[in-house]
Amino acid sequence: MIVTTEYTDISMPGSPMRTFVAAPKLEGRYPGIWCYSDIFQLTPPLLRTCVRLAGNGFVALRRNLSLHRTAGNGDPI
Image (tube, rainbow, N blue to C red; front, side):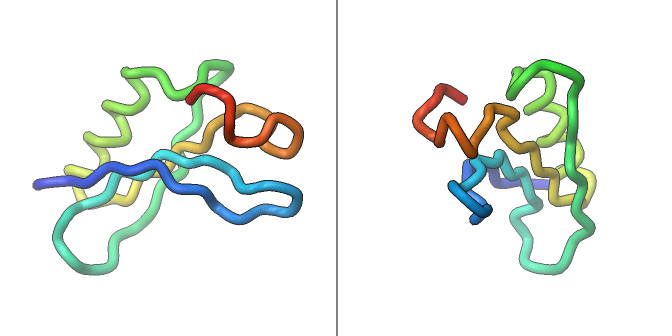
């Protein structure tokens, strides 16, 4: 299945939260999965996992674990 990927900012109290989104390209409704890793941020293996899940019909999201309330979204992803 063809997937799309993007970074989007989700509105949160204080400041937006940067989030990586991988989703099937075909129009439709798909179940969503919040992906989480222990202490690491958006590493290539985790991003590949999100894309793999999207290829199987899920919308996979991974938020940036930085302190978006204090650091903002100017920090590296």
